[in-house]
Amino acid sequence: GDFKAEPFKIKAVEPIQLIPRREREEAIQKVGYNLFSLNSDQVYIDLLTDSGTGAMSDRQWAGLMQGDESYAGSDNYQKLVAVVQELFDYEYTIPAHQGRGAEQVLFPLLAGKGQYGISNMHFDTTKAHVELAGAKAVDMFTENAVETGKYHPFKGNLDVEKAEEFIQEKGTEKIAFIIMTITCNSAGGQPVSLENIKNTKLLADRYDIPLLLDAARFAENAYFIKQREEGYQDKTIKTIVKEMFSYAEAFTLSAKKDAIANIGGLIGIKDDEKLYKRARSRSVPLEGFPTYGGLAGRDMEAIARGLREVIQLEYLDYRIGQVKYLGDNLREAGIPIQYPVGGHAVFVDAGKMAPHIPHNQFPGQALGVELYKEAGVRGVEVGTLLLGRDPDTGENLQAPLELLRLAIPRRVYTDNHLDVVTEGMKRVRDKADQLSGLKFTYEPEVLRHFTAKFEPV
Ligand SMILES: Cc1ncc(COP(=O)(O)O)c(/C=N/[C@@H](Cc2ccccc2)C(=O)O)c1O
Image (spheres, rainbow, N blue to C red):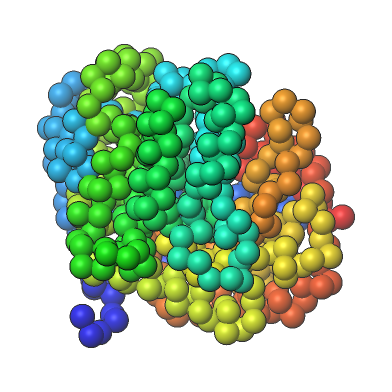
């Protein structure tokens, strides 16, 4: 339409507050400079994650009252199966408690010791589950992903040539699967084009390798295809989504993102009944039972309804328009970001903003701590800290980009809140060259960024 206002009006609100600067400085120091360790009431504007933090609609809330808590065969489960069939044209659905729940059930059925998982970019928890299955996660992003200041419509693409060389080098029996992360979180929530998905499918078929989707932000990916890919401008989001999923044979999906639910995950299997039965039986010890997957019936209802809401064009126009609003304002202020912005967050190029901080002193984390001190805004590092260590050598892996992610929860904040973020980032920029890096005082063994402790270098 010709107006830009939110496609909703607000019915319930939750008070937020900005605690005094002194208290913010004490709080972050007390928790060892790990933003995850702050209490929510110490945070003014929380951009830690878009995962599970969205606002549900009144229809989703109404659905909670129709939770069928039958242990087996819940009506909400049937609704979930029906939505997956309708939107993705996948026969089988197994719910899980969240994305990681889906990964822990599916991946060990496809990947094993000494094998490789290939992806455009595995996000942290997906990489962890490929490794827990005994395999090695290998990222095959394109050069466009690392040139943050340079425009490219599909920075999330997989480098098909690079992947083919790798497959030939290792031999196809060593490749467990190719998993396409849509959108590509670690590259900056960047989309993958349908052409790239098709070419990846051709590669997978040539070597008889399963192609999976990590579909956490599938609707945002579809939106960018509609906006930017030749021949898709006049297609509906629903049509684009169906085509995207048609090239894969299974997906894992965190419902905490593009199902706009507070918890939940899904395994979708297109038509491989044998794989479905194996995953279904594995879900019993790991996720409880195949018709509830670690969730209450009411949660499955919220997910079923959210999946329908997220593909509405008015919603996506607003949602991605808001991310672009923040990105444009930061760029105008001369703050380097991954450009163009992704679908769920603005990723500040911390490596560019604080070039004096080496990658292993975590510039993204240093900027994130400063932004919290300046404005009570909580972001998250997506760089060397998040990437972790090489499972074989134990060496710190250097990330291709050192980013500070400012993730925008769905339907939660207004542009006024984002203006505070821009102002806070300007103050951080003005003192960026005085910032020091951080070093561990405590480093956990796996997914270290969630619970690590630091001190300034
Ligand atoms: C592409 C993709 N695939 C799978 C999952 C796992 O899904 P789940 O197990 O979390 O449901 C995720 C989770 N992404 C969260 C994780 C996170 C990171 C930092 C702070 C808080 C949370 C995020 O990006 O924010 C994902 O992005």
